[in-house]
Image (cartoon, rainbow over all chains, first blue to last red; front, side, top):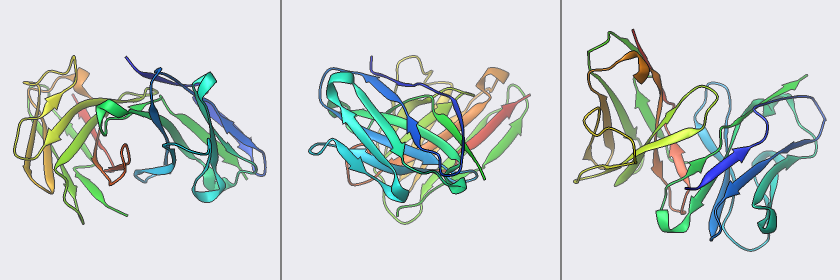
Length: 114
Length: 115
């Protein structure tokens, strides 16, 4: 079965620090990759996605993620975090033959100290 | 963007009772909706796929008789936790697909506590 691993459950950073959240998946075929974010008190929402093409994808609010096929990874990065980035971040994988089904990682709670 | 709304956002019930959670797509139609369950510090686990006009598709290990799903219209899916027990206490989230494969719009979630 497909699985998604997020390396850290809690991350605490100061404002302006750089962020990298790890995500690895287990599936050998074609995948679509996503990062979802849940800000405090809000719905889960899509941050960025990778379907094909350039493995470096850019999302909203300055976030980017790089798909490295050989490492089965899709790490999320931001050069300089802000207090407003405090949220929970979920990596997710959609396997083509499963339609819209997503397999989620356990999530990483990011707290940015002002 | 598309909006999905759940109700109630939290509910407390006694063991043995049944609880219904509603999931509505507010500004679009959804022939399919997904129900997830989230345990503390764990990932969202897909429970079932709700299909308008037909039976829901349950994931392996999910009890169909315990978690009744009905997709009555193109904008409403319901999850009923029947004869709830404390181990059913959890955070339940619904979602509806967007136009792109794997893109989902999520409800705000419903926290169920069974005493």
